[in-house]
View 1: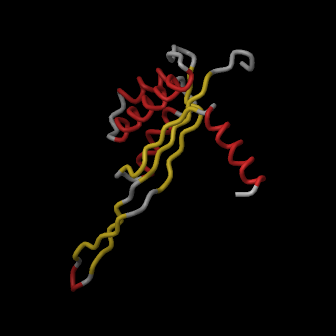
View 2: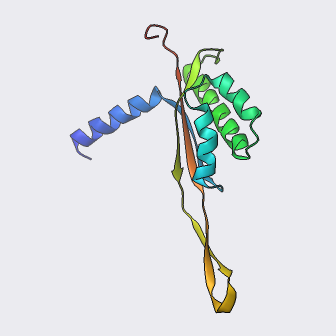
View 3: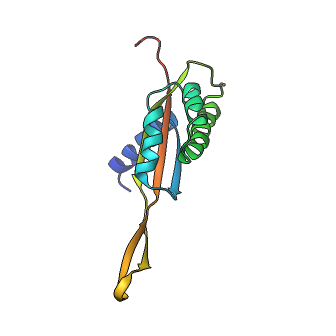
Length: 134
């Protein structure tokens, strides 16, 4: 690896140490359904977001709840401090498509209809609320 690439990689590693995130990969539900849940908590304070997810009727909210708790635990582990009320907020949340399972369903007259079983990846970034900027 050349010097320029190594310096760039070291810069990325240093940047990752100050970011607090969690990823959930290959969730067997469609990205569209997951985005409905994720949109409810984007930009919210983390404990308020946990309350929203707890009382949501969507099945995907259980998985996002667990993922958000993991992101909070990652923050606590990296900083060595407990997460307090009004300190952390959901900075970024995004849902990406994952590989699709393609199946065939029997159809009339010897045909086969394609079924696409979708899955997704979810990533949550949490960050501290800066009192100076607000």
